[in-house]
Image 1 (cartoon, rainbow, N blue to C red):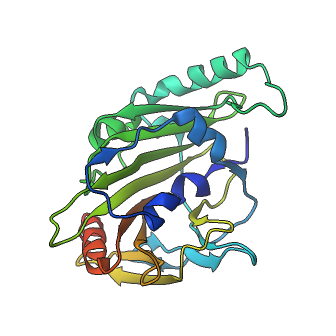
Image 2 (cartoon, rainbow, N blue to C red):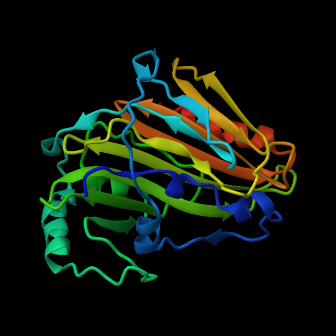
Image 3 (cartoon, one colour):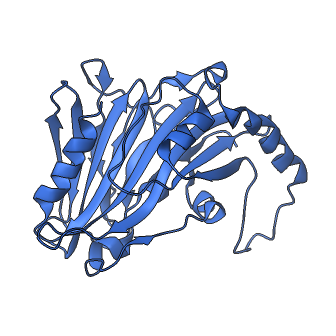
Length: 278
């Protein structure tokens, strides 16, 4: 399973969040790890070295190829040694080896192809998920929405973990009508020494669905940290989105905020408050 990268599909905006009416009740989407895993496997061969600011690597943004809609954001990450993970994730090599040993390839056109070498766990809070990894370099954060956090682990046929992703599924939250309502998703991508990928790609490819105009921007926090972000569909859609990126200690953190038309200020404030924790 070398060359597998956890990228676009899990970062892709939910089309319904961009085009639907504002949510009128609180709803948590339940993550289905096998389905997500099947959608997010893609090999990369590119190397992108970003500029640095205060010791942090900045991403390189580019449009999706002609004929589709979206963008890519490439970041160079640190590759952590496995001995640096001190949590219960050390069960991963045995789990992955068992998956490969028990794996029987399904028919080519099967609808539920669950390949070996990838598994996930769900936790009640971000801290619980971080404890599972036991990686000191992982930033402890307070997320701006409910914290049902998933940990996805990818490994090869030798049982070596190649990369890890912490993420929250899209959660719709109803705010005060005077301030609007918003949805959110969070991701943290970690490479290990066993990966043969040089840079992950974030962003999204919406294919034939046009999410509206896309603008790439950035701001600097009070601590001098640069947060790069993308405005998607602002002024074009009923539901719009900002996607923010920060690389800290070689780990890529992403926060996506979807919002109603006219609530860009609220969404950007949420993103800024999140970024101030770095």
